[in-house]
Image (cartoon, rainbow, N blue to C red; front, side, top):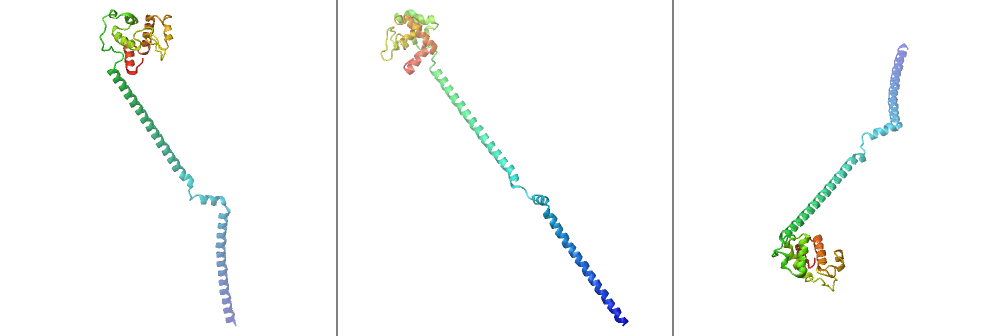
Length: 229
């Protein structure tokens, strides 16, 4: 009887130990589960931290693309500015070349046909070699300050215009007198007797030539090239 009781007691003790161990193991498992759920709950319950955590590993496409876009735009503007500057430089160079060519052409013309130089005509020794209105014209020419070397040009110019006739009238244009002033009334600035006085007409004509062409030879050269002066 005693032996049976002892064995039964040992079996009860073993059963209790196993049961206690099972309870302890279940408690540990339950604790782990609860801890995991609590951590998950805290993570989902803190949206600020969750958002920060989500934002950390990612870079904004717009922010990363902005510097590249700005750089491309700046490069394009720089290229456009360089192209515009190159175009302006070329235009200025072309304009300078054109002006240089024009000036060279003028200089060549002046050298070939110097309008203010003395013509290759025999220079009269004095005004006495002329008669009539031509002699008057020569005297006024010298009195105005021109040299005798200009008289052959003046003689040819007004011979072509009016034949040195102080009453010559161009019925087509209305030009009048030795210098063929148009209209003739312009010569009134040289004198009221402009219609009948050759000297008045000659003084007006020489003043016109001096103001527009500088010399009678320049006026004669223009008349030869263009048909008028």
